Length: 118
Length: 420
View 1 (cartoon, rainbow over the protein chains, first blue to last red):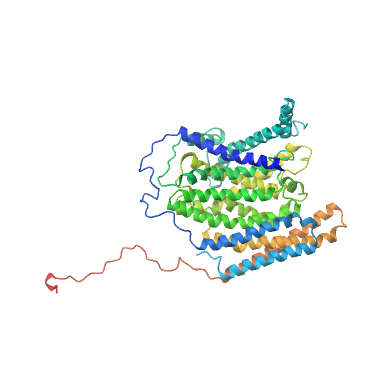
View 2 (view 1 turned 90 degrees about the vertical axis):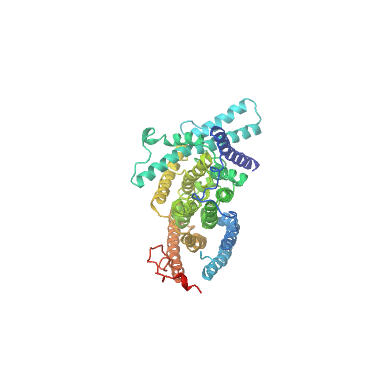
């Protein structure tokens, strides 16, 4: 069990390290001639106006909330799916009821127009 | 000890381990060294494999669009990608003033690393895989989510308004399409009773694309959207927001976004063939693992080609269309497929246990296929009703101001003497 995750850990470190090393090598190989004009923000030749780091539009939060509901729901369903072959019909029906409740919520959100992009 | 000709991967791994053990190294050290070396080979191999992918993508893309594609450097232009890589290694990094340095530099690394991490659990043959995690499918979902972090970080860290717009779009798109993908991944887990990818491959006596076609289609569509490729490339739409999230990147940092992109496209095909097309399974693959590798690559190539055709032939969706497809089509359909499969499989299978195993598999698959077709048909019908009942705001017909040289109204001349 632990050795499984040891491999994954080594793999993650390497997959982060190799691209980083390539970028460092490219940084050493490439020329370095910065100038104020070259380093200015590119916005189609027009000088940038005002603050860039603005707030997200509030509508994104609706999507984020629905996403959270459904992602957490699905994570709940994974143990059930894993044990599916050993379950009785009654247990399966219970999980289906759980999904149906959430499906109702989704249909409610759609009918309310919460998932309408404006 | 496996035979070299039937299983070269297993032969090399076993031989290497035996060699280290014969030098008197302790078993735990041998394992760590073996793990590190195996991981290094997979990571570096996938990065170099990307050169071939870039060539293939450009060549096929050229053919689809009635061009030749790269054809000058080397045979069939094979070394074009190598030449491009050598060039990109010697280019200058232009870092604009005012970027968030840490986030800006971490983003390209993360977007490549997230894709490579997926390769850690993919079973290439019966003996050749990184590691068969017992939460493999969940690992795929979790690591796949990291790639979108890379894109959001790039857009936010660049301190550029176009990049920020790309990041906004990426947040909406990638977060949304994760939902149907995770739900559709439930079905292979349900049918095989395991989250180990190798176990999922092993239990596919009948390919899961036959017993769970809706899940397969939804997985394919939402993976393309997660990848941010052509019908769903809103976050880097060239004609709208210049280049989106990667506008301020140059040199290899820019290149790494595309390495991640190309590699992700291939990894999607790989995952699709592992989860739904039987992976390395095929006649004789149990005895000769090398044959299984050939089968897997064959299936992957076909799916990769389908993905490329989709990319080069479909126009880009509008953002409200894209959100509608996800929330009003794919998510309810995926949930419906899960419900139908769970109920019907459980309800029917108890009456089928008297059949012989072969007949049982055939009848079960046929029933599931029928159930899926029914869900698809009713689902599309219902969703069509829901979509049509909402009136859409039509922008194009409303009269809008246009820059047209109209005759200026002639003002009456004023004499200077009339000033009150």
